[in-house]
Amino acid sequence: MPQNFLACDRGQTMLLPPDLTDWVPDDHVVWSILGAVDQMDLSGFYGAYRANGQGRAAYEPSMMVALLLHAYARGNRSSRGIERACREDVTYKLITAMAIPDHSTIAEFRRRHETALGDLFTKVLALCEEAGLVEVGVISIDGMKVRANASRGANRSYEKLVADILKEAEETDRWEDGLFGEDRGDEVPEHLRTEEGRRAAFKAAKERLAAKAGRGEEPEVERIELDPDRVAPGGGRRGWQRAAHKELMRRREQDAKPVTRSRADRLLESLDRLEENQQVEIQASEDYEKWWAGRRAAGVSGQKLGMPPKPWTAPATPEGVMNKTDPDSRMMRTQGQPTVQGYNAQAAVTRGQIIVAAEIAVESPDFGHLEPAVRATLRELDDAGVTQRPETVLADAGYWHTRQMERIVSDGIQVLVPPDAGLREGARPGWDKGPYAFMRRVLASDAGHELYKHRKATVEPVFAQNKFNRGFRRFQRRGRSAVRSEWRLQAAVHNLLKLHSHWISPATA
Image (cartoon, rainbow, N blue to C red; front, side, top):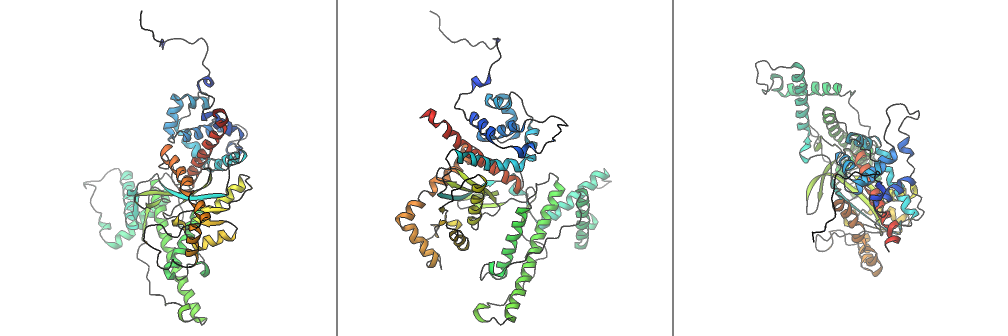
């Protein structure tokens, strides 16, 4: 008797065209994504197109939204990877109805609808609320470092940025001239062999690049007026400068703009930011000296007045470094981990591992981000129509910020943040009384211990699921606004997968 096998005839002609819906099981996540998109208000996408229908036809925005959500759920965030999947994967073909969007079309859709894609987070959160998944009695806040679409090697000091601008201008001149004459082409020009010549050449090069990039006069940073009562007490001159720099970062966050593709424009932007940093530092120093002199003139003396300001002279050139590929990104350090060029992705998570807030910070430490995360949570809950309010906020020791914690508690929300990170034996000097001792007693109590022990099991698996299971280790786009949109889209996908598990659970129970 011959061997018995199922036939595999690839040349068999189908009498009827196949139905893609028959090839995808009923409990597949793609059905949940399509169902969720059908329930969303996507007017923010449709409003970006001409109402009269003129011009070349665009892909249906609801299809593109579903395509991106499904691709991110599969850990596929590359535009070319999504295009390839549309050719090879039946679930992608089901979403696009066999159409194959070009990778440049997919990339342009993400760029064009940056804000609307970020707003999908709130819309998915509203769907989770309707399904009864948003229980915000206790929320946990944490952050993870995510690589930027930029290299650490692209960080430049002021001097190196100047050198890059000079080189860029020289290359432009050589390209326009089209020849070197009898020179090799790499000699140091005569006018660059003196300090005065270098300064004049840099000024001229910067003006040429600015004209090439279509920029006008150099922007003048608006003066920052500091409230002495809000500056860290006892911080002195450095305290004022840190407070001024923090306000400058807040302004940049509110005025976040896309990172241009022009290399010349990026060099000028990086240089401008370093110069703005120094300008703000000088202004804060002057304000501090005026404030100290005013207190002395008012008759304040002794310990309340403090030590007189030491003489301070601003450095000849701005200090620090700026990344010329993504000026918004920073060097991120984590205990026991290698330094990365990236962003600090913040999240607030419920016990059911639903993300209720997803924001971006450019500072490596989590210090100072507790209150902004709580305010973002309240804002997102309001926008999603969630009436319940958090009762308890949990965070690790890196979030300890006495003033912020007091303001959160004054709003009726309990805060549990340990004052000790466990990196030293005993308490830090000066951290053994007052709110520090009180928090240790609360965490040592049965009720406090029962609440806080769930923090790690609540928020850290969320980061693990996104970073390792879905490959969210690096941002695809550049600039704080683009990165924030991408992180919120990723958080929306995370919540959507939780919603999918909830929807199919009766069928699998």
